[in-house]
Structure formats: C-alpha cells, structure tokens
Length: 126
Image (cartoon, rainbow, N blue to C red):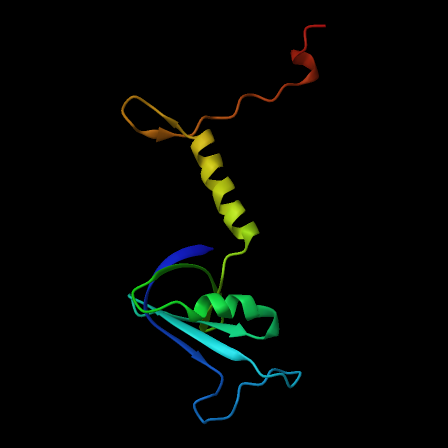
C-alpha cells in the first residue's frame, strides 16, 4: 500500500551496531536504509545490488521531505520500498474506479449504485 510519509529522519548504514558489515545469505554486502516518520514509526529497506537505483533516490531524501513509499509489515518490523510503475498505476485505477462507480446526489452524499439484475435466457423476447 502506497503511503505519503513526512520524514523525521533517515539513516543509511552498511554496518551493524557492533561494527560488522551487513552481509546477505550469499555473502554479498548490502546497505540498510531506515526511515522514521513524524509520528515516530520506523521502516527499513534492504539495499542490495538489485536496489541500486532505489538507493540513489533514497540518498537524496532529507528530514522534512514528504515521500511516497510502499509499507509492508513483516513480523515485528515494517519494511518499505519505492513504489513501482505498476504500484502507481494500480493506485490510479482504484481512484478512477471509485470515481466512476460512485454517484454524488444533490445533497453531496456519495452512494454506490446497485448492480442491475443479471439477464437470463427468459428475459430475451425472441
């Protein structure tokens, strides 16, 4: 799910708290990006060789910026990723579908029309 988050802080580390480097299960080094929102919630992102372009984008972020990210809860942690073009298109389609299928009445109350009765063979006059 894409969310807009105002950044309180952002950290990009290649070492753990004990000073040892982050290493994946294949022995490759990676970086960990951690963002904190104004509300205090934190989310992290694994930045390996396949996320190099995402890392370039994240490195220009600074505290106070409002950014769009995908958030996903994984156990006790929250992970984030940058929205893909597909994610952005799905969000646009959902907004358009809601606008198309929601009718505003004169009192500006949103209502969703009930689907018409499905046609059967008996409904056809010939």
